[in-house]
Image (cartoon, rainbow, N blue to C red; front, top):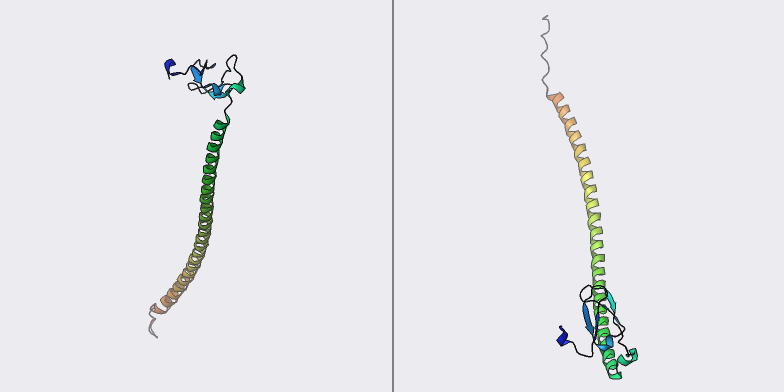
Length: 152
């Protein structure tokens, strides 16, 4: 807003931090606002001859504000209920996922035990095959020729 757009009833003051010219309607007197340029908190001055009570809202304005606040509160409560439902849904999903992970872990453990048992059985069978091969080699080996009886 430039100076020509500022209503004559507004309070015009400068930010003590950056010097930015600020304006606010009279109801802002005494409030702490943030400077639009530097973001620092600034207390709106109360003009000379003005009392805070002079800027109090009328009963109608307060009733309107109260209605707006109630609508906002109802909307916020509805959103809270919606989010609580989502949180509960996520908790159930997480519990199911953890249970599924536990089942998978148990299945993996059982599978590993089966593999270890199968490997031991395979080692035992291989040892038996080696033993059988050694025995059959002893039986299948041709006997060394014996010199005929009576020859030196």
